[in-house]
Image (cartoon, rainbow, N blue to C red):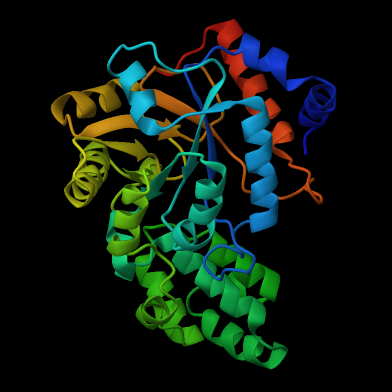
Length: 346
């Protein structure tokens, strides 16, 4: 970690959360997760760590103690409808990617604590019809990590044709696989064949993503379903017409499924590369596209872009102790800098 970030974290560790909440004025702040599970996940574990149900429940206690937890309907009514109805220190809980654990693990805890949430789904992955490229990468990494030395030796000799640098060591192979993007579909398919991975069989057996029946039950429970693109492609690698299709079509699928008049949209990865004027125009021409949600903390942004802090990582958690204070203080620090400099995204 750079020295500047170490110094920032040291200062923030002694700073109470309340003054930061008061200084960084936002209608609502987002707290985001991807997966909560007691078990490792071959689609996520090779990419990043995530919290157990007990750790997540500690986070819920923290949120209820420091925020007024609100739902999407009230958030949209204030930001889009101009109605001043949100309480002070409002926070909105969200989940990206639409993993099945949103229904099996997260749902019971949210109902227990009476906390609303938005679940953003990758529409092509609904009913386990499609495996996004980042999860395809994770599945390859999982297989490489589980391979015996003899197995890896066999893989390495075959990897030579795809990437000579990947055959020198297991670490080199993993580094190369991690570098692949959604433009490398053919390469990922070749790796699957080499590692004897059948992604469709994995989806059929494991069912890692939400089904439409599970989504409809979440809707009946009062939760909001949002769109997280059609394919979870890195938008920085797409042109604007392709980005617009990913936004508009995924929101249309969610609206058709849930009966909502508009659906919120969360950018895959983040919205750093997206021009806000372009995003505003997409919403203007497509009224079924609701609020946008980004994953860059709480910087100064247009009111129709809700800033979120991703809080998956469990580092610093202990029995009954949440680490949310640490992550949220980072987000507020970034927001404070942008507020002082008045630096808003173009």
